[in-house]
Image 1 (cartoon, helix red, strand yellow):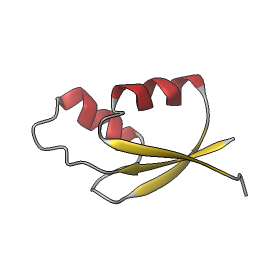
Image 2 (cartoon, one colour):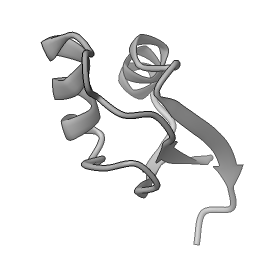
Image 3 (spheres, rainbow, N blue to C red):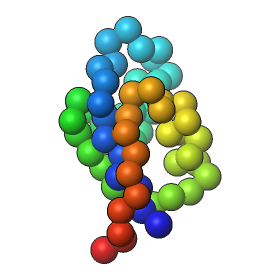
Length: 61
């Protein structure tokens, strides 16, 4: 299963660790999206920055 992750909030005033997590997810600015395959490490990253991103399931192509 693949997950589409979209940044929906700004990183201004956000902890440095959370900014690094967004960068690791490939997100740089609001509205930017990336598709990742689901894994335990990805779930942990998404849990950490859940207040900054929107997650949707997509078909793997």
